[in-house]
Image 1 (tube, helix red, strand yellow):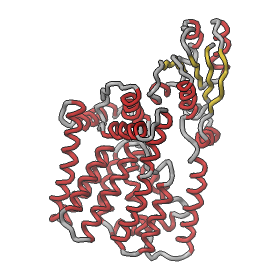
Image 2 (spheres, one colour):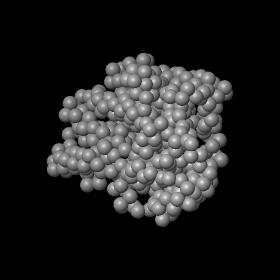
Image 3 (cartoon, one colour):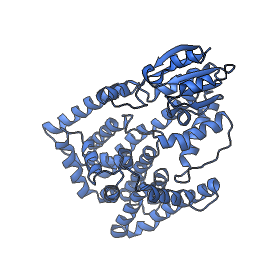
Image 4 (cartoon, one colour):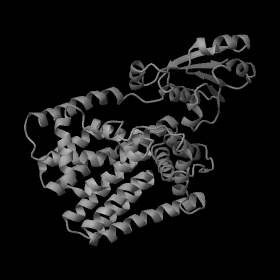
Length: 442
């Protein structure tokens, strides 16, 4: 999940539930829909399952949302049956989705782009039902509505709605009005949500557009073909010899899939700022088209591709499934919470924004200014000191001795396995991947 989601959704949702803080949505550049989703997921874990720990509330919400990946696999199977009426191909498509969406990186998570991708595949399912069952009303209306909901989580996913509308306007005008009506209902919901939260008309959409214009010059810039290389990587090189031609065949045969995807890709290739998470909403479409194009494909390479997908994803899954990110911050904070802390001071800036429901006070201290902080410390308060830097940089223990403060070393809370592997491969300092050292002030 992204850092923005922590600041604008997870943090305030946890504060509202566990600390009964009044919620004030200050980020007018994104839809508040993710905040409300997080809040009700936390409420479910708290009221139904009796979870009070912020760590386990977050984990329970992630597990519930993660189950959507399983539903995506089933929907991909159903779409393939509707398109090709070929059970063997449907199983191939389902297998591809299982390989991709079992992975924590691509699978459904508490992140706006990831949740958007779920609604995209549901929208595609209802659009496919509309054509195969020759229904010109209900199913295509639901498709438009769900494409609109996908855009509420990630505004750029609205390009998929526009692409589908463009396709319908050319090839199937009778369904266009129903699809447009579904999108209008989603837009109406966004208007109501914005008015209830901000008191304005489409405040989040206009705020997002304004923010992008203001920060355009400060964003990092990548070449236009960056996303094309990322999509090529999704074909899993070696297997690409089978999966890429299959995708290209689908582009020609299934225009209701390829036209929206093309709209989305062209826009993002022309945008100077590119992050891999930006293409999450189209990954289900991309994988679906690869699978559909593999119909009646036989020979050595298709079989090899299947084994390659299984082994590569299986190994990666084993590495990361029990490897929580930022455990060097979350675990020491949870330890302090359970110990009844009053002050938690850290030189990691991730502390105040990452964790929410602590009844004590969190403070961020510059790693070079531990001495003045310790010398002014209120010794009557139960305080924990957390650092992600080595002693030769912070001089923490020496500074405590000079200030007459006794520090008791608690533990070294290491980052997750995947983070440690990345740190080995790329030793450049990163606060997410270093150790977290915890001390108690006596």
